[in-house]
Image (cartoon, rainbow, N blue to C red; front, side, top):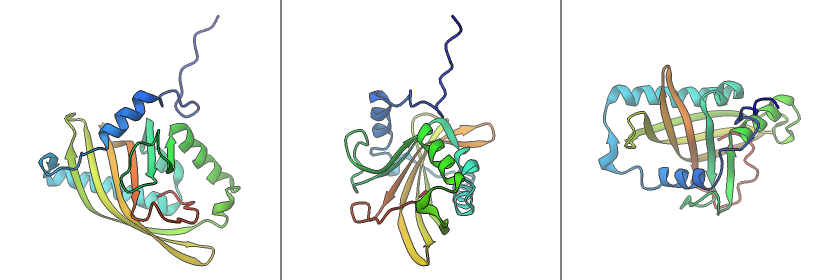
Length: 197
């Protein structure tokens, strides 16, 4: 009998379970307190540049490069309530692990993602970038505000809210462990948010 197949987060959701959800909820609860703020301007500038690059890649539709910004075991979470809650117990606008992000990026690349035919044109603005310590020197939490203007099928729409990023320091910058996108109107009729927020 051959060696067991290596687990691949792009094809299997093996890492998503009760412990993963519990750790995610803990990480995104009460993390942006003043006493945890990181004031180092150089570090903040590096993180701001990382978030601005993420916005640029999404505006360009370069989803493969955007996906490469995420850690192999990651989460992308758009809560369905302003209180955010627990994605394992509450309805979300979106909750994707690595496998689901890979699927989404693949589908967008086929030209058969009908909600994006024709593709949206977007412009993203990122502001108010703040860093917070986590107790692990290699991991930082980031809070930023965003505005997205989307032109889809001749209609201009706007998305607004704030994002929480859990970033791990890597040899060449950062890797996204989790991204939480908090829309200010998450509990209203969103009319098919087919873009990646």
